[in-house]
Image (cartoon, rainbow, N blue to C red; front, side, top):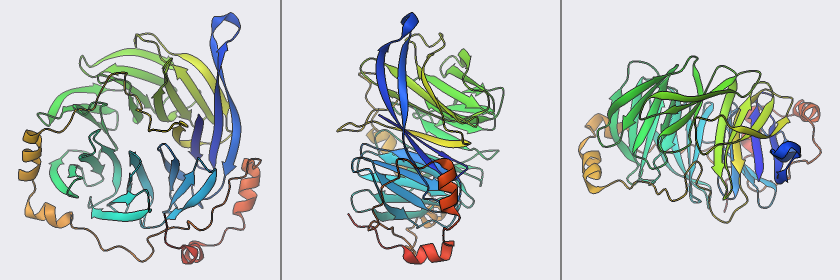
Length: 392
């Protein structure tokens, strides 16, 4: 098990986590040991995504870097976008979907690292995207005050909903029967069958990260030290606990046969792992914590398994398939203008990566050493010329 986190200081951290038995007092404790620090980007990291083999990071330097966690090497870089990478999502082992401030959503073939589809998704920035558990639909929000539904099978827009403000987070539930849209401190809960708001949850502070713990329970972190668990059906707060000394920036969760674990990363530099109680009204217990000494921005958990982990998916829960009736609705909605926007953009000549430069992250690198290394980093134009197409 590996915790990976990015920060403002342009460094990617990796920590190996080892579950242990019960410590003194009967409380279980895990240990996290520094595995690597790697300085690949020339600006702060903005997004992290993981699947069963790869970790990918996005940055304000407009690039996506790929790390092969099985071979412990840097696999290459993708440079198709021309703007800060705002969101990265894997769907299974075959596809990566990226969004950026250039308004594009790109679908990548993970086997060959080729851009299969480049869609002009929003007139402004793409601020967040989420893929339906079935893999057939995706949602995106942007600075053009729209919520957009995408038919990933055909690679086109399916529906556009105008919203009053710029939303910055959108997320499907584990089964895909509902989704949430976050605007400042307000969380609107939508049902897939009606595509309308079924209720609204209001957080005390601006929401920075959300995570579905079950089909109805949502973990919410804002610009504060606390994390709250909300029930999306009753719209009530089930639990509140202090997680960090400064605001929580990102969260992740996963399940093992024994535990359901929530992971939080904060501006205070700490990554913490929490064991969730079966009854979500009870606050979680701390399993372990590690201090990176950096201002963290994004977080991921890589599980060394043969298959993808079903993150936040309770045992026995299966994603809700998009039925034929919903598929018909998707096909009827698009207008001509929408279809024109979803036409595949002409790939840029700079699309590709440096798969030939398989560099191993230095296990002994420190944050200070990474900064010294950055001082000699060539400019962006020179770096782009060095990029070559990504190969399988």
